[in-house]
Every structure is written in C-alpha cells, then in structure tokens.
Image (cartoon, rainbow, N blue to C red):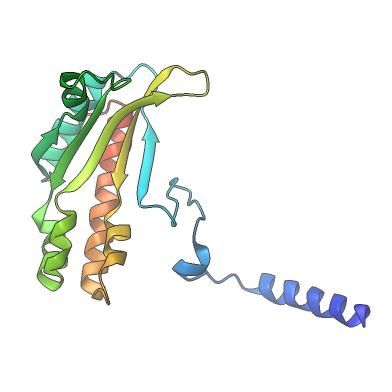
Length: 180
C-alpha cells in the first residue's frame, strides 16, 4: 500500500513540475514577491538606504510625486503630536497622503465606498534595526489590498488599484534611495 502512495506522490510532483501555473491569490497568501510585496499583508515596507537622510526622503517624495502627477493633500506629524502629550515617539513618526485622480478615478466611480481608503498613505518612521539603532523606513497601505474590502470589485477598479500601487511603490523605492 505504501508503494502506491509513493508512486502517486512521485506522479503528483512530476505533474506539478511539468507546467508551472501561478497560484490564485488566496493560495499564494503570504508569499513575498521579487519586489518584496507580501501578498498576505496590507503593508509594503522598505528601509531607507544608509546615508539617505529624512530630509532627503522628504525632498525626494515631493519632487518625484509632483513629476508623477500626485498631489500631497495632507501630512500628519504623529510624532510631533506625541511629543506635545509628553510621549517619546522614539524617532520619526509621520503619515503623508498622496492622490492621483488619473489613476484612482475608476476605483471611486465603480466603488464610491473606496473613498474610506483615500488618499493613499505612505508612512515615514524610524524603528530599531537588528543592532537596536533607529533606522528610517517608508511603508504603504497597499491599494490592491484595500480593494479586497470591496465586494465584487470591477476589473477596471482592480487594474486601477494595481497601477496606483505600482506607481506608489516606485515612488517609495526611489525616495528610499534619495533619488530625484
């Protein structure tokens, strides 16, 4: 009997390897892509390169986002508000809002309830690295993940959310390098 299970297992492995098919999203949950995107997480996080300052990141985000037709309608200096309440924020803690209506309009037209996720948010913060030294990070609340909260999103909305997410990740990657 064990022999048949072994033969079946070998056959299954060979058949699976014969032609690779991408797994559907739910079966691929938690898998990290080449770009560092965890399909099971609402958060995309990237460390800022050593030698790139907070000011460099802010300048990069401003310059690059304007060139990509994004507006920055709101910034929330959460760390400053913590300080005002006598709480040590343990480094930089802020959230910056970004909007590009040429990319996001389809989502909002098809699913107005998606407005609860607007504008897109990029967090800038410091947290301890492996050596317990504060390190600067950028993180995104992923539009494609937010869209999972919408029942039966249209194909147009899905494409728009992916385009928006790809642009924001590109923006973050360049800003993490201090690019302009």
